[in-house]
Length: 207
Image (cartoon, rainbow, N blue to C red):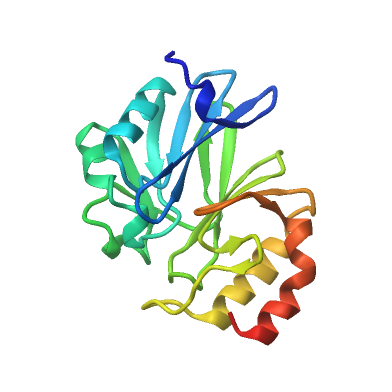
């Protein structure tokens, strides 16, 4: 395997999370890799397709999954599909992509070697936004649903503020442990425990 030490963001005995920041919107692209089998999945083919293809080949990525269909998260989808990677997205957001291979539903399991990613449908930023939780590990890939300091923007077409608040409260804060590491689609990491006390503040401010 090529040297990917510069992209390693988080690791334990079972997994590695690699991160690169790409494109004009500084999108986070993550690769979750099983340390036991070497299998990996790339989350959000956002931009800079040549860089993502190099990373995918180096880490033995088998497929690509999208947290949602906004343009800044999908710019590299055609090139990755052309290179042979299957791209999955929610049915609600599928029409936002130029092309895709499979539809991902709520509460599905995506196997990555010995790891299991559980899908969590969290509408509000887009109708089909999905978070991915690593089963048995306190790790959540939140896309643009949850950031440090609040929810993702809901001003775009298909966005809805009460819906994203409901998704965050019911599907993330009520279901996940406080120490769960949240890896968002832009910016820095946070945790469920850091963000959950501020939910009412976000409701009161309205964004």
